[in-house]
Length: 162
Image (cartoon, rainbow, N blue to C red; front, side):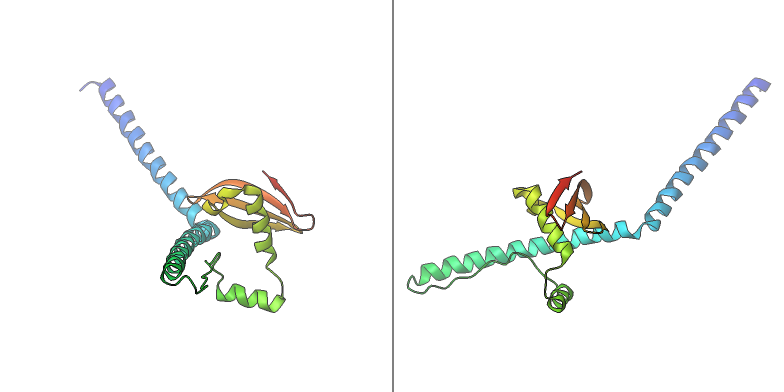
């Protein structure tokens, strides 16, 4: 073998080793970033839980609607009415709202953001990401991806989309 061939092979080996080290570094950095941000995991878990709750609510509404239709058809003289459930409220949230006697301010801010978002707000998840005084920064999430941010001022009821 000539010296020039040996040099080229040496350079190629060094480049391959450098590439392997770089790729390994990138993958370890991504893993570290994910582990350093547990709040993002929580947001994703909350979104998944909210999707499950929405599916359950949809099933309950469909069952209640079917029951209401069947009872109306079976006896037209009885005025049985089954109201569909709108939102699922957990025990902890019920207890905190009972203790305070008012609605949760975060939920109020989310409701304002949903009104501003429009008719399709049921297709998205709204999460309070940050609170600065009376201004709530709300993330609009679709398929575990934040697609918009909204600022809600609870004093004035003003909602601005970022």
